[in-house]
Length: 283
Image 1: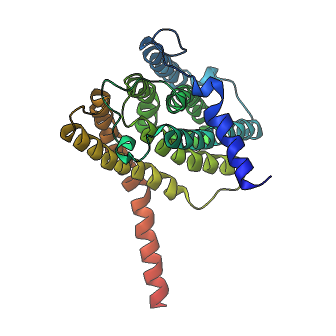
Image 2 (image 1 turned 30 degrees about the vertical axis):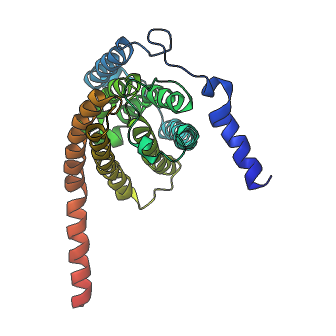
Image 3 (image 1 turned 135 degrees about the vertical axis):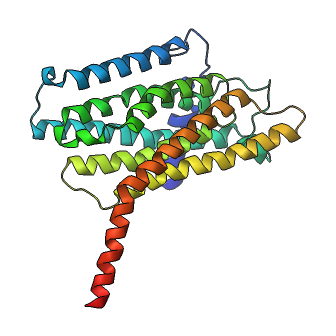
């Protein structure tokens, strides 16, 4: 199969298939299309997490081999789903973008944009995938050797993201595709790392995962500035600015937490590496 045929088939299954191309968000009719869905999901997640931590002794005891197998399968599934979302959403942006209108990449025309079509299908897919990511927390709790990884950052991020996704998606936010593509791209790298760790081949690029997570927030802010600029300088304005401002606030909190996490986990390693190099030079 040549590249042109491969692209054609990929484009059909990820963009042109009727289920995707004819998708339309209908409040109250689609799975997860009510605000109650992400709120209840977050409440159940937090409740079960607290109960699991408080009464960890009643949780089933899994062998290390079984836990590694479950973690590997979970990570592989999310890695592949994230890759599909990146490709599908990227192709959808190219497909739906009006010709010779690069401004559309940052600014969906206000009052003229409805959450329908392939781009918003992948936004919905991305939104629902965040519920599957709740399993990350359970796997951490079940693994006593990794219990230190269950941080406030982890729980706060997992509990809040579904609500943020709902607001961004249902409001036809101009930055919807930017969030999907950047976050899913980071998750391809992150879950690939977790998969390799689970199968006993721990890579040396753990720090890259955190750096990519920090970079996605910076990139989002740069794109958000472009959206706000177009909103203020065009007659119609951009769609979903309310959700954009809310998302920027949330991303700011995450960026600060990730920077704190980075400094606490990698600053000492950097210092040790420098001291080791200095000693090697003195020898």
